Length: 447
Image (cartoon, rainbow, N blue to C red; front, side, top):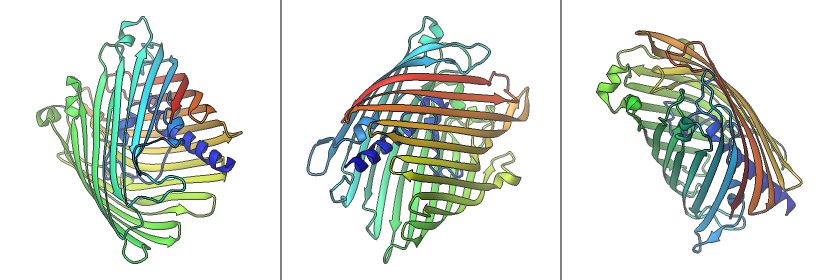
């Protein structure tokens, strides 16, 4: 029983780090609504995020929930966090600091497989959350950054053991973030990703094939940023071969179409339609009882209308994500990625190299600790500066630490620290260097 509890708490720590830590990384939630071909190797590994304020699902996802029917179970939770933001506007020249209050309710309804139960033939899940943020400052610009950030996701899929299956999903995120200069304006972005997938696993399931269509939508509510409103369409073919019982070799090919919704504004701001392509050969699964490896290498490209697309080393896509479960309560992860990504606001696209490491530890069955560090180098292409197109190089560092203490299985208290740092060689007319520290203390319940 204690081993099971330790595993549940370790899982809770993962949720603390991944689900609720997005505010430290600017506009991070929108990354999860990118297309496969548009973002290179995004789906190969599960890289960590830096520590922020929320750990709301940690208490709810490990509890049995409320049974609504023979299959449906409701999980719900809420957390309240108070903390300090050292740089509200991501600006080291005009730095504004402020205390912060965040309240986050979450709920989840689904019929997923639970301990001791039979996996349903068709699995569904519906979840939603709201992050309410208030800056407790006398500065009117800081107070104006009050944010309501809802998110919602729904999925419907057949049991993975069937020879023919399907999956439908949709995810929506609304983000309100402070601009780079002190102002009463708030950057508001709505992102949505919908997909439909058909899977074929003939015979014993050693060989499987899937076809997927995805549609992505990103809308800025700010008038001055509506030139970046973009829609993407994509088709993906994936072939998996189970080399070992828990290890598969895969080939994946994706073709996308990225279009800007406001054509006149897009032309005025040097935005261009593109056709991203990606082809990967990879390996994913367990390589030993304690080591899981996700790795892929391949070719990626994009044809940009009227301008040059990625060239040279930009055509290489590669990623490796290694996870080592030293014990049932200790897990170490590290990884590296090289790819290019489409950029609707800054330039046309950017090349990126990123390395990251994370650690999760459960102590005496009640304390969950998580830490991570990430460095990313970005090189933007096609940035307009003084009526000329230039490249811009960003050096981003993020780090985080989270500690949660489970007073009861449904009640937890915790603290977290997050660092976000960026150093830029070309700011394209606006200050872009910043160092941001976030410290939060939180109390949450979940069932």
